[in-house]
Length: 483
Length: 104
Image (cartoon, rainbow over all chains, first blue to last red; front, side, top):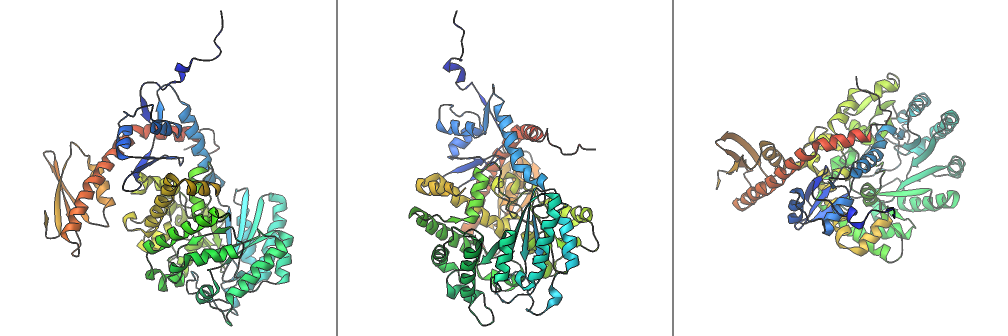
């Protein structure tokens, strides 16, 4: 008698009946719905398909059924594989929370030689050393950095212009590397600089210690210089020279640039993107203004979220054309969302986390020794709102800071899965809580999403990106290469 | 009917649960304020109150959206009911072998 090695084909046929796995759904556009699950899988459906699916009468032979089954939206009664896979994927996505704080921002000075109209910090003039961080505070902050259990530690220097207090940057990097001989973390350093004070000394230090640089580049010279005035002018020229010098000294991938969208930028997205291509960048972050600092007082009210969405969509379309022409250029905000859709590990981007990225994703050590739960939290403090001030390096221990009410209360309140509207939103797996934004704009950390520009922006971008993925094969090919 | 800046809509509570009505009202807050009344027999009267600048056409469109959204919310409630225990099971399974400290 021949022993059966394989089951007959019929054994693999769908069994009668299926059950729903946890999911969320909502309108994608006028014609379609989207269903998503907790691990970021999604399927686009017509309304009648959605209703048939939810009422458990979907035909197992349809492609929609197969898509829903393969992406863990339903399970057949004879299989428990979906549970194991979902649990594994969920755990992978949640690992970031257990890893705890990876990004540590040192505001080494508030001094700056630029007076940008959109500056989110209340900058100080170049010679006011009263606004420099002291060595004592830097050392105390470093001790806290290594209390974090995260294997990957990034120390970012911000300001003001951090190179105006370069001796302290040097001290922190050298001391951190020394301390890391015991801690053995994956340690990275980034200086966020306008590059006006870039010297050979700074470059050779960055080379010796593997320090990255991040700069601001708002677009072509007239736009950049108009938005980023400096004494004597020529901010754009100095930035471009600095970019070339960094690449020559440290390598092509050691510097990145960020732009900020102001009312003047809105009509010029193509020119802004072309400037990045012209300078050899392969990434651009189409960043909207944040409602903090000088920007809150002057610029934010001059354009709405719909204006930015139009800017973003035209920009993305231009970027896709550039990619189709053979030059690799990715839009960084879109890439973060794509990672949330297609990568099992999600994304570490602080502003799009649940629970919120405050404290868990980043800690900020201010020039005066105050510790904040996020960079935006310290910007809010500069405007007089101390909600996200966790404590002070002279007065509080690591335990005090990380278990303070200022951190735990907004963290608890801003877990998306429990937030009104967010809990039911199909875009939840790709979104995040932004308690500082909502505090700044609505007066509380949760905010009402029906009135939230953050929510409108997220929904607008996600609908557009998913629409492209689902209806434009060429765009989909390009977008998936960015992940 | 649009009168004095308001539209009254009646919801049959045999078809829609109160939580779905509340979520719908919350979601449409930017367009109108929904005042949820008492349940009488099987009917719940919800008064949609509009800003003085809102015209009749816009108000009627919001009332249409109210029922469209209510239908989705009711479906969500049903799905949530069917899958709540599975979600808890999956989460428990996901973290069953982590080093997270035990409760208590």
